[in-house]
Image (cartoon, rainbow, N blue to C red; front, side):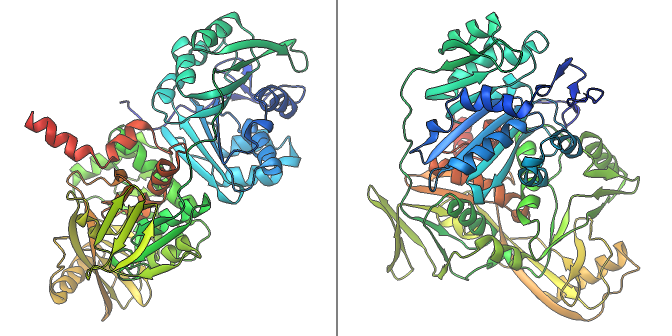
Length: 578
């Protein structure tokens, strides 16, 4: 996985026809000139036997080749809202090589005013043009949408899902052969659940034969409008109801990791109990202020795609929250070499980053008030104050115990999300202590970071943060003096007055400085190792863990998930030994 840029080539649209946009590179339309919405309903919804196919199902997955304007999703979403079984969850996984911008999608979808409310909700979470997988969640409707920005064959090879219905909606095979190749159709078969159905507008012979070679039974059906015929296909087998949902899930940790897990799991109807020694927003999630910034590397690698997608998802998750202050963050370069690196990163990215010759402007970054964010992510979930130091797991479930051996709770499974405390169960977690200080004075108009950082906080300007190996952050006075000196050197126009407040906490880190998210063992999962970017990474990685627990579609590319898998360190140790 490599390339010069981390962004996909945009769609090139021709708006000359009154019926809607055409793809200039493929010479084809995005939807029927007669009625694109009715065509979607006839070809894809009816063609896949919806809504009947999802009745009596707790979980259903729809796959799509060709996200385009999002019109198919909107038609599906509308039908799901009208016929959704009680408590059920719908996953949609889609692929788009040339993403439309938010404004282009809005212009195209304006043709259907009856869909306006759904269009507005979709556009509010419209994914960036970055390569990789991008998750949108509409929890009130029991819907998650994951759009993979990449070539169809590459994206499908990197997808983990069990798909019950497919919308094959690429441009015509004669104009877009790569979308309909045999390797693509073979991946469609690989990802299909027993009894999966396909709807598509094309009846091209190569497509019929390709679907048959991939294991599908194929039949022609009457087409829509001027198209005489369309295809339907069925994968062998009988649709299953899916794995049983856990009765109760225990989460150890009420910081941003635990709160994000609680939000993802309760949205899917799970019974969640949260335990934390310090209560909500304890540990590293309780600082007076902080920054939400992306993790930046000058490379297209699986973990880079995953963490950039996590940052974008976190912005959507916190949008509208008290304590979320968008407006960007300025990243100063320490020297010419770092400036060159920042300029190179900006050249690889979309317009959320800009190098102005002196600093990297992270335009999508934000200032946050951590405790407020955590409280809103937790919602109505109750946090039990308890120090859980032991978990006994057997075939009946897990039992959580306090230091005196007392059983404090039982559950079907547990997720370890207690920051540095997860080292009790996962040896590759290491603590890193840190301090910040708030000084009286005027903060910078936009937060500034240089290795340290300065931003507004209750009472003045917050400056941070130290990094000390272990759980002891050291004495307060040297840290405060260091902050005062750094502020004077980096931002001499700002005056640091008297100390208003200090704060210390302990981060959780891993040897490769990447998070761990996934299955830890029998009835045990983990979300930890978030370092100093817990607020940027936790919401999406919680979606990944929740999806793994429930057997839902992951929001990550498989390569990205593997780069964060808890077992990776043990695998590396075994390789070194052999």
